Amino acid sequence: MTVVSSSRDLAGSWIDGAPVRTGGATHTVINPATGEPVAEMALASPGDVDRAVGSARAALPGWAGATPAERSAVLAKLATLADEAADTLVAEEVSQTGKPVRLATEFDVPGSVDNIDFFAGAARHLEGKASGEYSGDHTSSIRREAVGVVATITPWNYPLQMAVWKVLPALAAGCSVVIKPAEITPLTTLTLARLAGEAGLPPGVLNVVTGAGADVGTALAGHRDVDMVTFTGSTAVGRKVMAAAAVHGHRTQLELGGKAPFVVFDDADLDAAIQGAVAGSLINTGQDCTAATRAIVAREVYDDFVAGVAEVMGKIVVGDPQDPDTDLGPLITLAHRAKVADMVAGAPGEGGRIVTGGVAPEGPGSFYRPTLIADVSEQSEVYRDEIFGPVLTVRSFTDDDDAIRQANDTAYGLAASAWTRDVYRAQRASREIHAGCVWINDHIPIISEMPHGGFGASGFGKDMSQYSLEEYLSIKHVMSDITGVVDKPWHRTIFTKR
Ligand code: NAD
Image 1 (cartoon, rainbow, N blue to C red):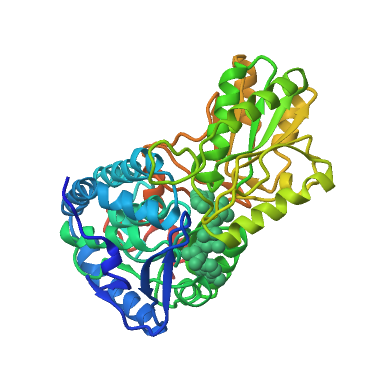
Image 2 (cartoon, rainbow, N blue to C red):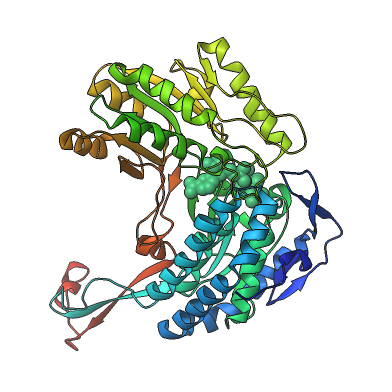
């Protein structure tokens, strides 16, 4: 394993293949498990955003004009370097997010490396309709061209994975990129950019600007000289980003919030559903857009489900993310914990019953115990709004129609799961639940070959898979006359020859 120096040393933006610290303002990256500082980051100035976009614009023709094989070779090398730098990436991710080292080591970093590797291959697979004489008088062919300069804005929950999901398909398609990570979690995105340079990515093809959403994010999303804006984050901010991009008519892609239903039918393997509900709701301390948040459970098995989940949640080890025995790390900030705690505290007033959790342990760090709220009403805040914490709510349903209705009773549509041994129920749930991903008898797994992306308030467009490559490509139709005829038959629809 190669030891790569941490991006703590870069401590600023990355523009035109080099570190940049021009802005006067700085932001202290805090370890949420301890409250201790991790790095002092220089924030990008408005001039830095312009320079980054200018650098991406200048680098675009060379990268877009490289052959697929040349692009693929750079991305394959990046996958190798990222794999070799796994220890550094894990250490940075754990220190800036507080996620348990087991999750970062077994999910975030290898998942990101696999995704980079996937796009190294995908760069060489551009597909479309066959060239041919569809009109009889012309040869039609399809070109797929890079959209251009892509502005990318990412959240703090999976900093490396979210950066990879956006940057890699864009690079594979031949686009150049300016990415703004969340200001509280910039480290792994900077390391990714540095490794890309070491892998042979030309300067300017991938730039990172560090800073807050209100200024750097707004400047990037509304920048005149980008061609596309792609965003992962909350629904409220996603709509602002879309509005800023719309001023210039730029293409957008939005991956937004979620409120995933977890539907347990009476014939389900209840042990599997209980374990799946705990894993699906607590992943990344519940700070996961696809996390199971609304368990909708058949009346016949409701009490057993609630008791089973409470028992497993009660054994979860909350604590030091660096300890491999830790199951659950802290929430991202004290402010976010206060928001989660407020929402949970409001649940009993709206009919909810806190079965377990609902408490923040004493001491430093923004920890919060796994929380199960049963009997929630359909109108309650914890049932309707994204909590983004280790909180699972439970309601019962009466029959299959009611289960599907409740699953779809949300503005979001990112992910869902159905638990049943009945193949017809499974088929119906996968057909009728309105979400970008429906798992059957599982909840959370993702894979590079398959798309991720939501419907409704969860956004539109896809990350991961060949489908996400499409997001960063424009389709051009080239139609060439093959007759050489001056007096073309269709001209008579416009004028007759006199
Ligand atoms: P957020 O919307 O607050 O911030 C996301 C990014 O947008 C950050 O980089 C932030 O600095 C930036 N930003 C904030 N205001 C901005 C503005 N006005 N203009 C431009 N940029 C701005 O989200 P968050 O709190 O960082 O992340 C959590 C949210 O992300 C949750 O809602 C979660 O569901 C969602 N999420 C969705 C997916 C998905 O694939 N659908 C994946 C991960 C996270």
